[in-house]
Length: 520
Image (cartoon, rainbow, N blue to C red; front, top):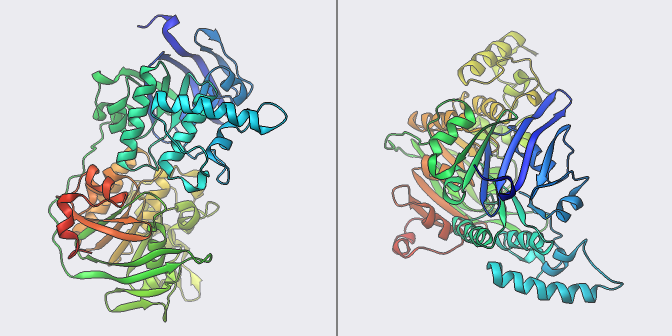
């Protein structure tokens, strides 16, 4: 056990309630100086609340904190910054129209004019960039930088303000694997220079690769503190969930049939005149899962909405079986369902559910006119209740109460409800966007099994996910999108994180270049 003076941060008995929700339950935590300390836990475990207390966004109901041995009780984020704590949020806190330099000095300017602050900051930032390998173009506007460089700006901003303890919340969510590797190299250098890093992530592979110590939270409690070298991904998953979890997806070789979804030179131009989907062509065959990989914002969302009948194509076409859709004859989402399409949207809250609806009402959304749910002009309430109850039991949706509001379900159970609604209608083609976004690790295991079962039942599955582990585990073929276009295709047997990461940055690996002309 480390001595008290070797701790950068100490928490003792931190407790926080929001009404009836007991978010943090008497949390104890010690973070060693100059270490990388991971904190993991399922959604709702209390990680974000705890970090917000440390950074001064929330005030603990009880408990004590110390920074470098001195009592610490922040009244806000300025107190955290003054104590040497910096935080890089999952969604960057940058002004897009400001330059890098302007963003970094924002809020810490000195003097009557900006000129002295800008000049002093420029000199200090060049020193920090050289020291930590954080080169960024200081006079470039944020909106013109890729996300990997935007993240460097956030880290530089924290260091410029004197951060000796740096909290990073899900830092690789918007990065390619190569950008993530570069980030880890930066974090290692920061650690070597004495910076203490607290890393919040759900990616256990990253925890194992970069951290020295790991703390595990479950249902508001801190349930374990372990040395990274003495644990494993499987052990951490079990601690997070409270039971053994299979992290690997078991599946047989695909039994592929005819193409059920055909896409031909499909284009989409948004209301601002920006071409978001650029002459995309591909097919998905019966009995296979085709994954689409890419950094978020490269046209995947618009592609799913086109195929789902939510937005209209500018040109090109696609077909499901004998049903063709193009710009001359667009269709709506209801018609696509009649054509045999199921659609699990990327954002279940925006497009998949209505929180004020009960589970049974959410379960028939889009299918409410079907004969199985109606008697003449009236809905058959008993039939709806019976079907919803049966499917909630089958899909292990908890609580298994069809009359409970969907807002009262956890993210994983909301997602299982949406999946059950779409899958149980037996579509020929299933579109799935971000199947496990915001889903607990235990529910991920269940959802993956259901996706594989759809494939094995002879359905054509198109999967979009920003999680490369998920794409690699589930897909039989993988397409990569960059800037609205499909820039390459690779079989599951050929794919790995490095290969996909290069393709996601629009760099074709040497060993694939000869094959691409005939594939896409």
